[in-house]
Length: 419
Image (cartoon, rainbow, N blue to C red; front, side, top):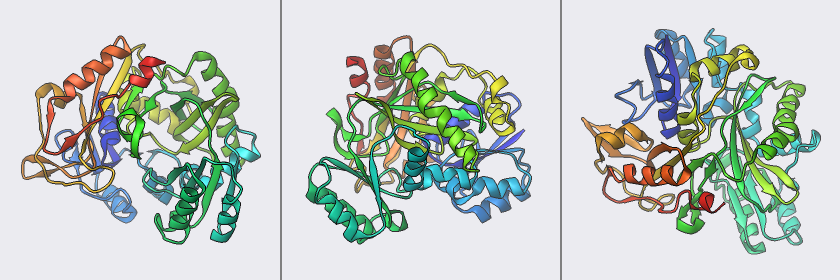
C-alpha cells in the first residue's frame, strides 16, 4: 500500500513513523517532507499548499490513501481535491476544516449549539473594535479570525496592548487576510488541556490528553511559540472531566457540524480550559496538534492506519483505539531567537539513540548533511512508567541532539509534576 502524507514538520514525522508500523505500508510519499524524514519516506519537496502540484503528483504515482496533516491544505480543500480524483483521505473537507479556518465561525457554532466557551464579540471594523475595548474587561484575548501559524492570539494585559493588537491585525495587516476580522473574547483562567480525537463524523474516540508548553522561556515566560514541549497524559484531566467533556463538548461539536451540513471526519483537536465553572473550549483545530502528536501517537497501541481508514469509512465505532497506560514527554530543541529572528544552516548531529527517539521538524539536507532550516528543529520523545521518568529520559536523550545556537526549555513537564 502506498500512502501520500501531506506536510513536513515534526508532527508529520511522528505520523510517518506510526504509519510505517503497519506491514502493509510499502511506500510513503511526503509532500514536502523534510531532511529528517528523507531516510524513512520519499520526500518530494512539493509544498503542502500547492494543491495543483499535489494533484498532479497523485495522478502520476500509485497512491492508495492520503493523510492531509497541516491546517492550510485542509482549509484550502486538499481533501476535496483528492477525493474528486478517487483517492480516499484522512482529514476533513474544506467546509468542515472551517472550524479552525475561521474563529468567528467556531465561536458562533459554539454559541448556537450551547457548547461552553468564553464570551466574545466579533469585529470587522477597527473603530467598533476600539470602542468596545474602551470598556471591555481586562485582561482580554484578541484573536485573528483566520490561520496565523499559531501566532494569531494575543493575551492583552492592558487596554493599550489590546488596542495595539487589534490595530496591528486590522489596519497593519500583521496576519494578512486572517486579521481583517478579529474575535475579542473573555480571558479564562485554569489549567489548559489538549485533547485530540479521532472521528468519522458520528463517533468520537478521544486520544490520550496532553499538556503543551507554548511560551518560549522557562517558567512560562517569553513569547508564544508553536510549542516548546509536551507531556501526556495531562494530570489535570481526570476521568470525571473526560466524561463531562464527551457529553458537553466532544459529541455536541460533532453533532453540530453534522447539523450544519459540514460533517467532520479526521482528527479534531480540542483546546480546553478547566475553569472554576467547568471545562470550556478555547479553540478547535481541524488536525493533529504539533507538538502534541509527538507524545500522543507513541502511546497509541492500535494500528494508526486502521484507525484513520475507519474515520474515512465511517466504521470508527467498531474499531479499537487503545493507548498504553504510560507517560510520554517531548522536548523541543529550537534555534536560539525563535520565535523571532534566528540563524539557519547549522549542521545537526545526533547519537543513534537520539535519532531513534527524535522527530525532525525544521531541518533540511545539505548534500548528505542535516542542517537547521527552522525555528523548532527537533522534538525528542521518551516513554516511561512514570511522568518523572519520562521527563528525565526525554532530556537525557535530547542531549544527544547537537547543533550550534540550539536552545530548549529546561522545565518541560514541571507544571504537570506539581499537579
